[in-house]
Length: 194
Image 1 (cartoon, rainbow, N blue to C red):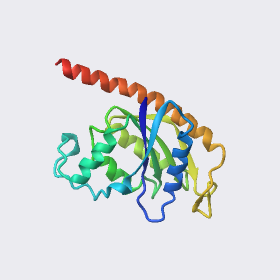
Image 2: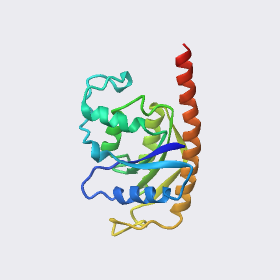
Image 3: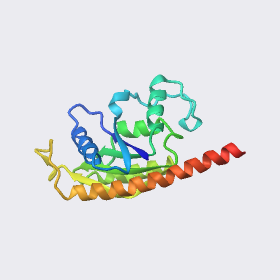
């Protein structure tokens, strides 16, 4: 069974993303094809990238990086719950992605965006970042509007049709996570033989 991390991509005080991530996590409780864990990047207190060596080298010198790397490495795929700030994802989420490299490679990613345009532009940017980190992103995504899915722009009350979008994205994500797991296993076997 694959393991999926639901990554809460906002660290802002008073963030509404926590309710969104909890909604995603609660929805996954009905599924039996994967295990899901909520991962809050705020729990890792990552400063702006402070590693002296590029992440692609895998030589993490800071305790916070090693802790973050160990957590990310546990998963076969990810649901990134992202706000949209100024047509892009939060700086905190981009920073958390930039800290690591190999831990993201050959894994699948899906997105739940929220903002004035449903987080669509933040997700577009994250897809580019994910590609560079060798993640396979699924087509399905959830786009939550601050105008229609949040009462007074603060209390999360998603419209019912979002459950179908979430189910579709999760179906794709689980399938792709399983496929990418076999890619990683084959790479491991090939490396072992050489």
